[in-house]
Image (cartoon, rainbow, N blue to C red; front, top):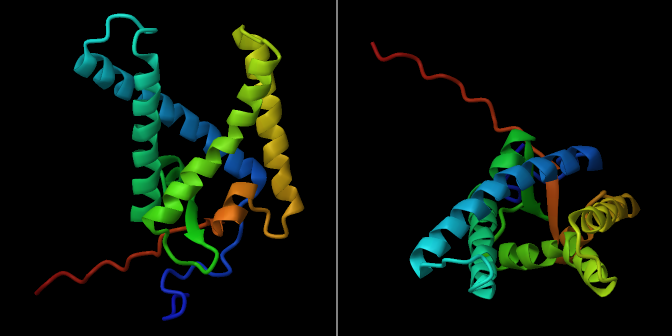
Length: 181
């Protein structure tokens, strides 16, 4: 329950299993695909980009910023992205409070550890085709997810560093108001 020390009622909330969080992660990827497509379209129209390789660094920076806005706004507003809402997950600080923008930005930056090490290995190894790069990326995501098993609260390393927790959360049931007479 909520109290003055725990306004959101989230301290001691259960940590969802790794498989459930990976399912939400996968669903988030589907949603992010749409965000990236719309951001790419907006960038292409705004810059009159005629070829995908011309201005690709600017496009990457723009998409990185748009994704950052999506996650930071979602985490600071409600503690949930659409995928987290669907899977009944919520992001809070370790003391159960909502995230402030600076912590949300730090988590967004550190969450890239899900991808960057694997992409770096693929680059150093000279992998170019989609199959091997996807294989390296998938292997790293599974290894990174397994690291949560080493933490007592089953949190991912970027959450431990940022002092955040992903918890199981269901919104409180609303009691319908009696009709006015």
